[in-house]
Image 1 (tube, rainbow, N blue to C red):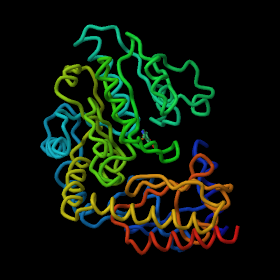
Image 2 (image 1 turned 90 degrees about the vertical axis):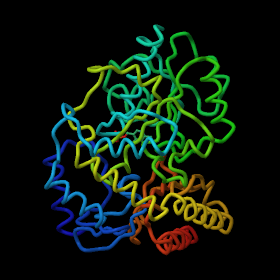
Image 3 (image 1 turned 135 degrees about the vertical axis):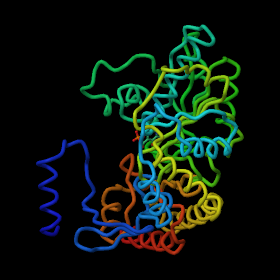
Image 4 (image 1 turned 45 degrees about the vertical axis):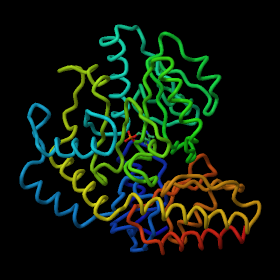
Length: 399
Ligand SMILES: Cc1ncc(COP(=O)(O)O)c(C=O)c1O
């Protein structure tokens, strides 16, 4: 490690709460799908800020919108009407069957909004004492107190007792367990269309339809978390659209403003009636600067057909990685994913492979200790994906 890197690392240890396990990399700048560290070394970025910078780092068109909007209006709070917010709401709602938007600041907050809306709809619109939210093993919904309850994993809850009540978890894929968990107190299920942190596990078409049917049968809400997998990454605007679903509530965040903190909860009119003036609020949510950027992102995605591109590039990369697995038996257990959301589950310890990829100039994530998680920008050059697959093959061949 260089002197500069070590100095940055020491300063961070002195200055910041120690909540993050950092990569051995101090990022100095980015452009498109390239990052440069503090020593000037270049990397191909296959992580995109964890599915956030979907249009690449420091996108020039977005920089222009930011500059223009920063001189016009950045923030006035949600006490005022703002056209920028309406424009983004209009565009997002045009992508699906839902009718109303609530803007907030992070994925966890969008999920909090979803849970609050589900409970209030049950309790104030339907007059039912229903409040329980059912989630699924392997899920990740965020780090607020309610969302660590929803996520249900001991490692995220350790030392934070008391954990809020009202969340029940059932095994992923087990319809009998889900059916047994539903009681008159159940308000909704909350499910990721593609589990991200859980190791890139997409719903299967049959399971997805069964989940929705059961919600309709039991008269509970069907809520889909697309914080990570939404906004074109999987090859459709929303991942649930692969399965022909019609969730009652949808949450999204990461790629919504390419790195500025913006999240959204979308709901149908009937359910959205659960919120009335004063039910829920946030100071920053959907400010003019953030939403102007969000609208421009949707423009660019449409103009450059990035959603279809994500589907095509992702399918080719997945096939290529599967070929590597067949060529080198015992190295890759499975390649999973949809579009440019791909998990390579290794059959050998993942950390050394992931570290070697970084040494060779490729940044991706390692989740569940064994799954290389690829979430590149939707604008990435296919040559970069090919170079990654070649490099991974080369590393695996020598293990
Ligand atoms: C599916 C999913 N939901 C919720 C969250 C939480 O989002 P945030 O970190 O913006 O609160 C994440 C973050 O990784 C996520 O992947």
